[in-house]
Each structure stands twice: as structure tokens, then as C-alpha cells.
Image (cartoon, rainbow, N blue to C red):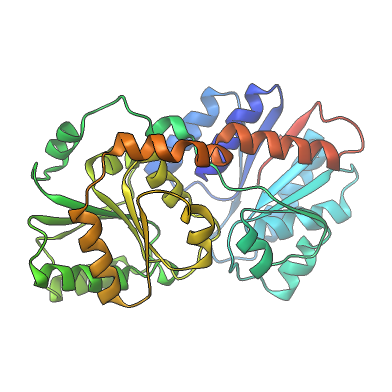
Length: 361
């Protein structure tokens, strides 16, 4: 959702009229409230179609079809399998013609044959070369447009490292690892806990601390496992956060143990924040970070992660220097570059020049 918000905001700045359409009911979460405020402040329209999680969403699909007829969108840009299918179905039955763009955000997005069939025939954008190679979707065109983030949020300026640590109760001299993501099998936080347990037993990193940020179906199990492993004083489960830029500033090393990704936004955030990164040795991580200074890769073995973390925590690099060295390579992941690429795609997919509206279900 962070990328949809940033992309929508940039497109409004470029003179387009943008609506964001959510197929589900409002959740009332802090994250949802934050992105709704940001969109409203920029003049982006927000629509909820009211689907209940776990249902087929037939009513929501009908509401989307009617919304498209009423608003007269030139482009419908969908994200994730269910919205892709609903938008594809609307495209086939719509009274008004529109260009349909599907973005594939992951190298493994589970789609049933029905969802795949409904979404097929759109113009497909992949967030990475790895996603295009590993997770192809039938379409009339395909291109790679790398994921992006609002890089200004991670620039220097705001609260100092010491201030942030004091606010969240981190000791000034602690060596801090941070991991961010949904707590699900894909992110493999269990391996992260195993690696931290090994590193804690080695006792070679004084004042070791780890911030695990996120919610998900595995959180309760992971919390219990951390207790059993004697990591209660080391690992902090931070829950869903709206202050990730601050937490990155307070940390020394970013850790991702993911089994697969697309082009991970959390890694892009860490790269922009200028902290060292220890990443699982998967193609998706190599594509975004292989040429970035301050990045190391580890195999799926927890001991390998522990050793790589140990080295990264001992060999601290100045964040300002890392940020300066990484900046030229990160330009392709800027909101401005991403919006430019999508704008060109929208225009190419429209029969007439795009001067009206864009929707991002």
C-alpha cells in the first residue's frame, strides 16, 4: 500500500486525477488511517468496496464495475491477484473501454486458474526481472518497472539516533538489528530467531538487541519461540509501526531472511537509510542490492546468518557515507522515476493521450 500511496501522490502532482479503490472493508488500523490522510491531503479519491476477508467478493466486483462506468476511468491499475481478477472481469464486461495495467509484485503470487484467466489479457508490469522470470502472467504487453519508495523520508534531518533510542528504550551503546515485514512463512522470521540465538550464545556482540517489526499469522508462535530460546531480553516484537524511518535510524543492521520476494520495499528503505544490510541469498535480493556497498548475503543456514550478522555489527560503516555511496544506484527506485515509467505505460496503453483519471485498486 505504501507504494500505491506514493505513486498516486506523484501522479496527482503531474496533473492526473487519481482514485484509490480498496476491495475490502476498512480495517481501522493505524496504517490505514495514515495512508488515508496522506491520500486525502493530496486530493486523491478513496473508495472501499466492502468485501469481507475470505469471501469471493462478488458484490465488491459488481461495485467496482459500476464505479468504473460512473467515473469513466482511462486506466485501471490493479495490484494483487483478487483485484487483478476483478478489474479484468470489469474490462471484459465494461460499457466504457479502459486500459488495464496489472503489476506483479512477487515471484510467488498464488493465483487460481480462475483468477489467472480473469486477469489475463491486461498490460503487465513486473516489479523486478526476477518476478517477470519466475511469475509470468499472460498479457498483451509486459515490462519491468522497479518498485520504489518515497526516498525523502529516509534522508537525514529529523530526530537523532540518540533521541530515537531513548524514546523506545534502547541502551545508547546497544548493537541493534532490525527486521521488518509481515510475520508469515515467506519472511522466515524463525530463521532470524535461530540466528540471533546462536549469536547471543556466542556472546561476541555486547548489548545485542533486535527489533522485529510487523504483524501476521505467525507472530504469536514466534513470540513463544523467542521466550523458549531465552531471547526475551534480546528480541523486541514491535508490532505494526508507522515510524520505520526512525527505527532504521536507531539501528545498526537490517536483516531479511525472506525465502522469496519481488523487489522488497523494506530492503529499499534500509538501503536509503544508510545502514548495513544482511540479506538471504535469493535472486530477488541480489537484483536490488548486489552492487550496493554495505550489503552481505547469507545462505539459509542460521549459523551463516549469525556469522554474517556478527561481522556486520562489528564492522560499522558511517550511515552518511553509505547513503552517499548508494544514492546513484537508488535513483531507479525513486518515486519520480517510477511515476515517469508508469505514466509512459499508461499513455502507451491508451488510444488517446491520457488526460483524465487513473484508478489503483
